[in-house]
Length: 147
Image (cartoon, rainbow, N blue to C red; front, side, top):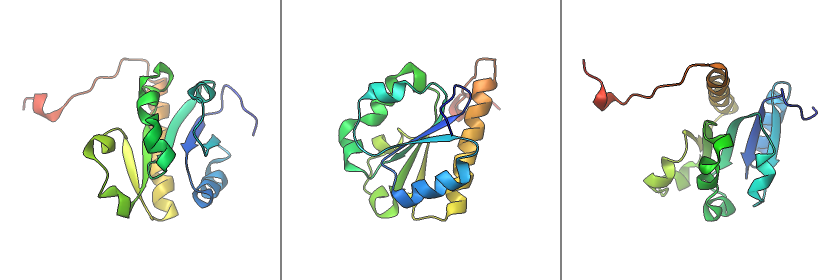
């Protein structure tokens, strides 16, 4: 699949080969998957303009040490792009709450392929809707709503 302005992009950071291969098989007809396996210049990912989803392996040491999520969230281009974290269950219990809240969703591994693909589809559908929705979105918290 060639890179085009119209093809939605999913960027993965630190994803293992087997999971990447599964995503390629199931998603390659609809999305361009960009796999990043090492710390890179942030300028490199800024060249992709049609990013629908970011998937980050939070267990990868280079991701934690690079403060990648903070850099992404500060970039206007990615502020409304959902970020899914991948985390092995054994490491999740040691993850700081402040780090957990940086992600829009966290998939605990190992889990079955259907669960992963369903969650990714939900987030890509959400991102597509928000990108096409012309009105400004509003966020409410439950403690501010009156019944």
